[in-house]
Image 1 (cartoon, rainbow, N blue to C red):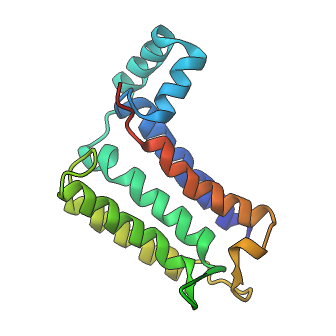
Image 2: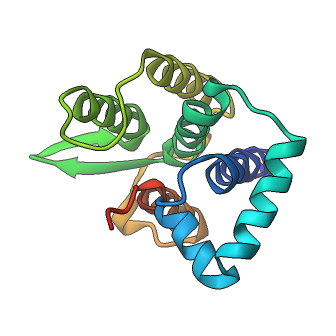
Amino acid sequence: MKFKYFIIALALLSSLFVYLFYRTEQTVVNWVVIQFMGWDTFQEIRSGVNAKIGLTGFQVYSLPEALWVLSLTLLSKRYKVRFAAQEISLVFLPIILVLGFEFFQWMHWSNGSADLNDLWGALLCWALGMAVFPEREPKVYLAESLNIHALLCAACYAVVYLAHVRHL
């Protein structure tokens, strides 16, 4: 069980690394970091990391989302929600969100561009999350289960906002 949380932490920290050092400064997470450390310090650290570690387009633009999907899938497995008198497992929400994000990008209703690599990476990580670490506990309603796991699950969904590109 602890290994599952190690995988989740590693995936989310890897995504954060990419966002901080390779994505636009206009993302919320980068804006927050710049507010704390200042623009010059941020740029100096970022330039040093970029000079030492070269990443591919897939690693910069598709992998962070795929790793987020893996983390959310592992965290969501034990939860369900009630929607229109139906019980729905939250394990499907990460892939539904990705499909929604890509659709909105494809329709040019949001920032970014729709990309098949994003879809394939997310589908692969979702399937991996479904296959690895089977959930041994019975499914419970997220809203009725206030514990550290539920809070981590909710926080992981909230992290999506940090990847949002701010408009100045």
